[in-house]
Image: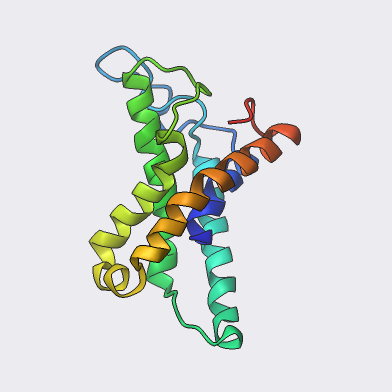
Length: 163
């Protein structure tokens, strides 16, 4: 899951610049995604996830495992940020402002996005690799890692809020 966990933090670091929605509003009059979702952050985040995934793949023979493939790494990295964008779109529809905490959705958006792409493009890998125990670990570790990364991001000044 590291290629899915890293992109959100990396997007905050690389972010800024032109918003993905181009400043446009949806038919409800609210921004589609908001200023927090930028092209630079998206591609910086995805690229970071892919790089860390490729590093993991290079280390797998030394660890005696073989879990990741390039397509799985790409699905994890892209899916994480696509899930985050879907959540941001939903937050705008619910009239939540940028940075407003939305429990559960804020923590698991990256997991849902990553798994959605994996199920579409690598279904057999998901069935063969994601055991019930691994799924439980993902459910437990995701909010802890998410909160920790956001607190660090807040303390170093790349996030406006610690959640």
